[in-house]
Every structure is written in C-alpha cells, then in structure tokens.
Length: 484
Image (cartoon, rainbow, N blue to C red; front, top):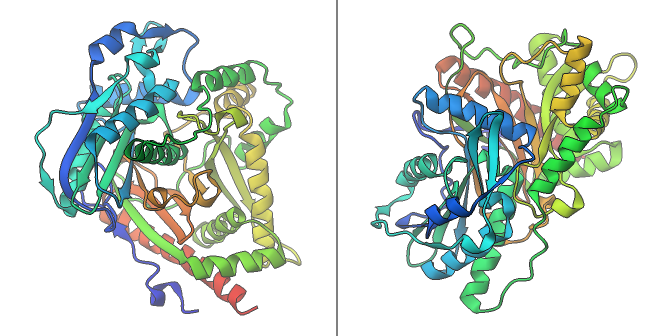
C-alpha cells in the first residue's frame, strides 16, 4: 500500500475566502433553483405558546453568542446545512408535503426563540398550523460552482432561531435529479440531527411520490430531553466519578480548557474570519486494514484517531499528555429520531506511554480507554460539571472556545444504506475562529476530516503540515495492518 501522498489521499481543499459555507462536493448537481417556505408564519407566531421551562445549556450559549454577532453587524453564521443528491426528478408539491410532515413531527422544528428578561425563551407552535409550500421565488439556473454562495446567503437570511420557521429548504434541479439543501439554526439541531433529517425527508418524499407512506419511528420530544438535562444538573453529586474525569483533565492544564497547539497567525490572539479545509485521509481498503489490525491488537477506531493526534501533539510540543475536548451524542433511546441539539462536551486526555511498552498499539489502547472515560463523563451536563469545579477552584473558566476534536461514524447511525444519505455533505457556517477544531467522519467509503481555521497563510500552512503528519501516521498503521 503506497503512502498517503502517493495515493493522493492527502489533498487538502480549502473553501473560498469570504464564503459562508465550504465548497460543495462535485457529486452535487446544479440546476434551476426551488425554495420552500411556511404558508402563514404570522399565524404560527400568534399560536405559539411560551414553553416556560427554559432552554438547554448549549442553546443558551449559542443564542446569546449569535445575538452578540448580529449586534456587531456581522452576518448570521449560527446555522448548519445538509446537502444531498436525489437521482430522481423533483416534484415540488411532493417535497412540500414531505417537509410539512417532517416539521409537524418534530416539536423543536416548530419552535422559535425570543429574548426574555431572564434569557432566551422557547416558543412552540402546534403541528396543525405548519404547512410548507413551494415559495414564490424566481427560479435561477445555478451551476455547481455558484450553489455554495446561494445556499450560504439564503441560510444566513432564513435559518435563524428567532425567525419562524427558523429553517430553510431549497433545491437545484435538472432533468436527471436534484441537489436538496436543508439548513437550520444550530439551536434546532446538530450534525446527527441533520443526517436523520435528510433520511426522514427522503423517505417522506418517496412516500408522497409513490403514494405509499413510509413507516417512521416515533420522533420523541426535545423538550423532554431538555428537562432531563436540567434534572441531571440539579441532582449532580460533587463526588460523582464522572466529574472526576473533568477534574483530572483540568488538573494537567492549570485548571484551564484546552487550547490549540498550532501557530495560527493570530493578531493579539483575536478570532479571525475562518476558512474550511477538507481532507480525505483513508480509503475503504485502508480502513479495512486498520480494522483488521485493531481486531488483533485491541483498541477501537476512535482510539486510533486520538492516538494519532496524541503522537502528533507529542512531536509538536514534547508534552506527555494530549488534552482536548470532544463532543458526543447524548441521545436516550426515546430520542433516537429526535430533531434537536442532543450532545455534550467531554474531556479527552491521552497519556503518552513510557516504560517497557511504548508502541503505537499501546498508545491506541490507552486512547481507547480514555474515550470510554469521555463517554462516561458525557453523561453529566458539562456546564453543571464545570460549574461545580469552578466552585472548587479546579476550573479557572473559559478563555474563548476550547480546542475540540470530534469523531462520527456514519455507519452506526440508523439510516445507513440510504443512497441519498450516502451522498450527503454537511456544513457548519464559516464565522470567526481562533482555533483549528477537527471533525473526523467515517463512512462506508473512507475517513475524512474537516477543520475551520483562521483565513491566513500561517494557519493554512500549519493545518496542512499537521494533517499531513496525521495522515502519514494513519497510513503507516494501515500499511502494517495490510502486511500482517
């Protein structure tokens, strides 16, 4: 197996400077634009009821931050976008009916947020007042290269939590099929929710095309999940061993959240407009080799990723520990199909082995154990855990957003096998950053990573060098697995 650079696997793609979302994949087609919207937003607003039990911790942070962004006159970037290809013709009315069914099923997508005296307020409308129709907009023909700017602008204008409905739906259609876009304010969902949304909308659309309604699982209630989070925070025991995971992690960093170790060319450490970089790291064959070796030596695939990052971190800094935050899904069984922001932050600390066994396999086993601890810690609301540790003096507060790495295996979601989902591409909007967070995604076809970095030459060079070395570590591991 040749190395990553020879195979062409390491080929960073940067988004265009000034774009609101990253570049669309070449498999997503252009065509004539169609949009869908709410028939009577005034009625929905009038019939919405104040849900007076508060918002989630993540929502509160996000809504406050987005209000500040808009207050500074910057575009709204607090949205997420899913794009997927349908290889069947677009029937506007069938998609409108599918979107109506979809929104009616999900309480959170029938919600909007208002400013109140004690903070953000959640208002929820009944299902029957929501009817999605084809919008009366002038169709435009957009080729592939123009789609991203159109989607980013329309999402920024419409996918806002203080608007009704707070989501935006559009498509670019030609004679053979169409690219479908779903954008929503981050307050309404996360990446996991976006995947579920595309799968559900695709099933509902096929049902309206054929006249055979799909059999869908219960949607669950995001409001119930918020209440469960609040109860967990109130009942938190300071002696809970899940808080100890946070306590020990912060203890190695002087009580502070992790910071990106790369030089990112910032001025006075201030956030700058960001640019997205995407890299294909491993193909299907290399992943199979990794899995085979992991099966022999022990450890999980997430452990492999964090071990590679830990090794790279040690090479850069000489540190004996790699400390980073991660984000993990926190869906109870009843929320498997719920639309909402259902995740939580957790700490990851990978100790570099010393002594007799300093092999990379040993590092992977260590990282795998650390990921198990992180998943356990994610069972406690991070905001509640950090508030407790701040009271103890073990947490010295956030200094901007913490450095974060996430890993998602799309094959484990309950929608694996749907061809529309397989074509899906997700984006978070490009705002300002002083980090180089990493989002790893594994699918049936390979392992990819995306990062958002400050848009300057120093940061671009740093991320290319960093991910190039990570690619080499992973490729070497796959090569050795292939030779066993």
